[in-house]
Image 1 (cartoon, helix red, strand yellow):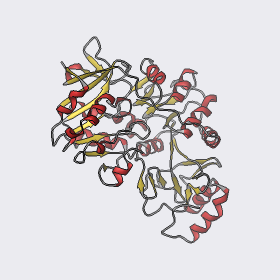
Image 2 (cartoon, rainbow, N blue to C red):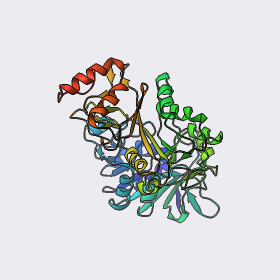
Image 3 (cartoon, rainbow, N blue to C red):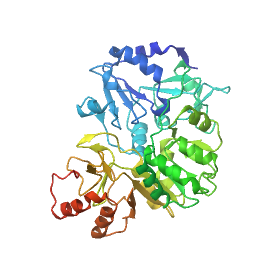
Image 4 (cartoon, one colour):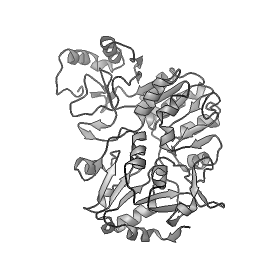
Length: 428
């Protein structure tokens, strides 16, 4: 059984040369991280592994000590400077590949996560954030649980024996919240176009942000929708509660909304952690192409920063700098392509920087890595419409994409395509 300690004692468990996995999203051990930040000297020579999600997990492990080492799979607003300066190792991996890397290719000395309380039968639920923790739980030499009295137990989630905990820290604090992005008029228009591509009975995968929220809002007239995604938001909760998203047409996990984590407020966490409608699963299930391809009419909906006229997608770099990560979108897109009746959608604003920059670009810059290949892309949607480019030849593909670019940039796109320049990045 776990030895109960105070959060302030956790830094003393660290030793030089250790590799320490820190859980993310709502499983981020907030009180333990606070204790670590106050005793950063204990982090010297320690490597931290974290799947820190932008907008959710704000801790920069490089700030603990000059000799602390960190491996991340997302650049966040908090760690971008450390990533750019080489203080943090960024590894570009898709979600399922991250899980496999953690499970099979990495020695873990310690795993730290926030968890629900131990239940009456001496097991621990992963709660409302399963995600990557199962990949390291069995292999970690030391497991530290920050046992939060307010974390929902989530019976419809994996459990593990309480004896697996080496140390436990008592915690009573609000579950980590993620604020909803405000929905702009442009996002609503994009959401309307995306909703036109969705049929009753489709199974949806979607992310977070203004455009996903607008899409979900526009699905209020659809029926018998299913849900299979890495994360669940308040907008999804509302569709389930109103009966639009009941999963009755799903041929896998019938009647269940499958997700890995909650991203929203305490109301969402409490509902998702107690309802029978939601099933929490780890990344090796939520992002497994072989599983998802067997879900009929699976529709993946994801955002992007840029799409070029080849159909290549950039979702994680700006001006040559890493600003996010590849995430799980590509796995979802490829699974949708293999699903019977499936399709994938990339939705983005036509412009950025208050209309000064086109997000439909002639070619991705040479300093920008491609997130999704031109062979992966199916539908592209902006506020100016939706076009399916998957089976279009190059000449028709570029015209289709120009048609949904902002009108101010359409001539520029044609001109740049005819006179390519290696320096081309975006229209101004």
